[in-house]
Length: 340
Image (cartoon, rainbow, N blue to C red; front, side):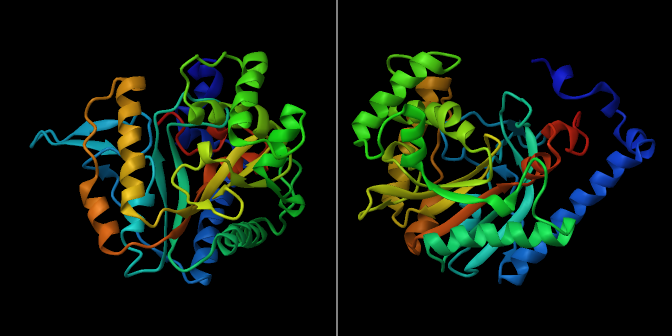
């Protein structure tokens, strides 16, 4: 798929296009109203908006590429953020509930659901449990949609039919087995499924994390035709969420609809040592898999977390994805200035 397939050429002159297409302009106004109502729903629940830096001195923790830029005067190099979470977490000791609604900038292979620059609502709370946090996400969505549209049910996105499902249950459905596979068997069966069904066969040396990420994308998410909150992820997909000792599953969730993930989050590590281990491992993955060698770790982030260790709940909601799901269209049709 080429760029022209995703972004209609007539949208290059975006202001003129809106002036001559009232139906599209009406959707723009509607999306701006949704932004206001998301902010209001968060503030009504005691959350404070706090803008975070866009330019980062070090790479973020995920094993992915980041856009980079340079100060033309000083020569200092910066990384454009793909998430606000780490900076928000550093403020939790003084502001227990906070959020930002702003732009994330990610190195993406763009498709109908992915863009390089998009709106995200990122929230962090230091005083809620996993289940309370999951309910917060659904309540905020319900509140904001009701205020904006006067309804939560749409032809392509019906929040009224939202369900909560264990990851293991949908994984078992995709594999055609009974739930309860041991972690090693789950990874093995996921590889078998990917070899038979994925667009590209996994490499022999693919990590458990990479295998399970692809299995979730190609096997599990397509089963989520209505808004589905996946909970309880296997260790390979824990990211930076703690494992519940009673279930052996990570306190992580993902919200998926029409096969597209539009929100995820969960409880996050309380120990700086756990963060450091994951960030060091991801730095090695960036070097081995992506050839990225500038992998200085965020020591200031570690220092702040170590000074006040605590487990927090976070979530990131893709606002453009949500609006595209409601409208049943491509994300590039509803992003303002899709050609930048």
